[in-house]
Length: 266
Image 1 (cartoon, helix red, strand yellow):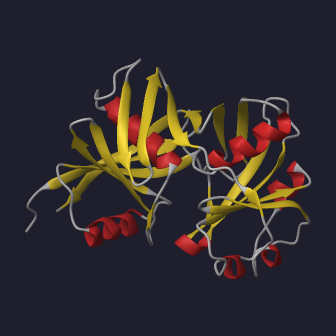
Image 2 (cartoon, helix red, strand yellow; image 1 turned 60 degrees about the horizontal axis):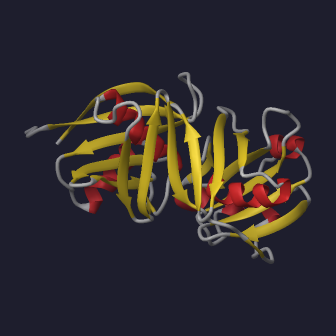
């Protein structure tokens, strides 16, 4: 017997048109359900991330799940959540919402169709490659670093980033959330390009990864001597992320489009 219907949305994040950017599920709950239910829904929705929201006195509690696991930080599903709140008139233009998450308070400000998210900076430190990391790639690495969640590899060119084809079976055995590969952009409108691979959490390639830019922002900011940059994630769908460094925070800007809406039987 169906007791209630729970609304959910699919949003293409970090884009201004459907079928681009990174799709995320957004599920609005009146109260938290058990972890297994949340994981099952994320598995059934089967997108790279599904966000779950519950209203609180200061905004919304927010959690993110891949089809295989809960994660500590996700940019595109946070952006998707803000887009849904704007669609429901719960986030008026020129206003702010604060999401309470496993990575702390994440404020998001709306400016028309642009949403700016304040995320923690996640600078990397140089490191030696663990077993399997470089073996998963055929390209020559210029630099290898490690941040709180991910490894970062700089390759020599945008062409190398666009053509890279990692061995996901090998990469899945590297102990980390994911691997960011990056290079300077060949195009004037972008400062750098990147891609993000996370087979260890059930995601071979993420189309556009906001949280990866918490690493990429500090990394390229120091090398380009810039505090404001624009990154392009060169997946098959592609997406644009505006990045601004503000001390220990990284401001990630982008838009989103509601692609679908429906109900989950509960």
